[in-house]
Amino acid sequence: MTRLETGFAVAVVAVLLVSVTAPFVVAAPADDGSDAFDLDETNAYEPPSVPEESTATVDGQTFSDAQRAVDATDPGDTVVLEGRFEERLTVNTTGVTVRASEAGAVVDGGGEGDVVVVAAENVTVEGLLLRNSGYDAGSEDAGVFVEGTANGTELRELYLSGITFGVWVDGADSVTVTDSRIEGREDVERRTDRGNGINLWETRNSTIRNTEITDVRDGIYYSWAKDVVATNNTIWDSRYGVHYMYSNDNRLEDNLAVDNDVGYALMVSDGLTLVNNTAARNDGTSGHGILLKDIERSEIRGNVLLENGNGLYVYNAQDNRIAGNLLLRNAVGVHVTADSNGQEVVGNSFINNEDAVLTTTQNLIVWNGSDRGNYWSDARAVDLDGDGTSEVRHRPAGLVEALVAERPQARIFVDSPAFDAVRLAESSFPVVDSPGIVDRQPLADPPTRLEELCESQLTTSARSTAA
Image (cartoon, rainbow, N blue to C red; front, top):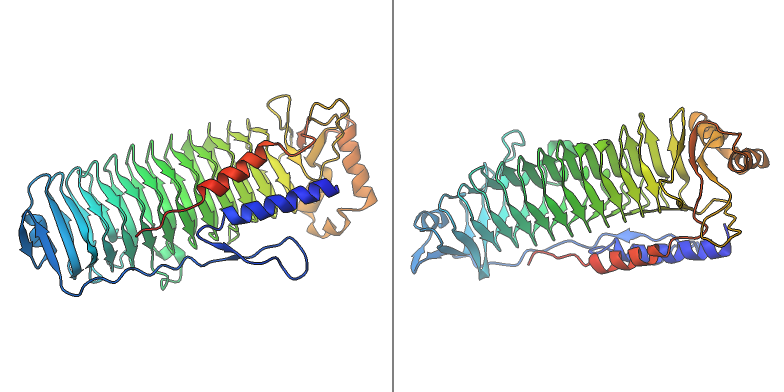
């Protein structure tokens, strides 16, 4: 690697580690002088104190029980809660708002069932601290359960803790969850025994925005959900940050997934758009920044994949566009397997990954889709005409990579003159076309767009926290 490339990689690491750690902080560089940083979690949240005495007010009437106040509402009324309520609420009146007073309010479900059930259209729940749902994941015990009749529900500035599922949307459309924080049950040791942070089932046109989720099974889980937009959410210490199943035409933008098993798990879906998300240190049992499994006709663009097991894991994925992503310091940049075909892979930057690409293909796959390819920090780029692309093609996955994947003990020879000769032959002489992946016109320099990408991530990663 040239001194210019090394300097660029260090600069990118410094900028990105600021961006991917809000609400995390960046510790000092390692003492050994390397450019390694530590991501120190400092986003613990203390809920505000609330009065001990409980009052519920609606239309000039005051009640000691929240449910009695809710039952007394007419469409369009607002219930103001203050203090501590040890009860479970059900909202059956259309257009009602249930919110906390300025002094705050806690609703404690007592460890049974759902804390709040929304069963009418256009209900708003705002500013409450909701805790202690039931423990039964099979019964879908949740902080807020949104029934299928509750189209147009808005959940704003909520803090949910000690819950199995955070928010369960059970077939309602146009649901909004925004500016909230969801904490699952950390004391349930197996993540798979916990509920999901936000569970979306058969919903359309819903929005998830500016919400923090931790210690759950999956941060946001989609099942038969369509046209959902999720932006500026932060998810950590869970199994999958975001998990799609049988959910088409959804958009995921400007989110952060850090320290999960998998950052973004996309499975058996079509027409997904993932733009400008960050996946950092997702290196658990599966260990993928972004997983594409049985995904078709989707766009993966402008994402930052940093220090994951696999930056991208592509399994039986067809006809997707993977463009303009930064894959930095992952164990594997992209792992392609199970007859994944038809991908357009262009304008990405593969920098300082232990292995840029691994693949099980028995064919030669060309990655370009245009007259310009990708940037590879380990490529022997030769740009004689100054057009920004190399006249020497690059084989990120060829004979050497296949041999190392099959026989890991061969890795000690990966920088040997013999292996270098094989790589040179594969890059220089088209007659040597072994199975693997070739970039016919790799970029000679990192795309200038990377600077814009870093600036975008730095700007958009100021995450909202529930008040």
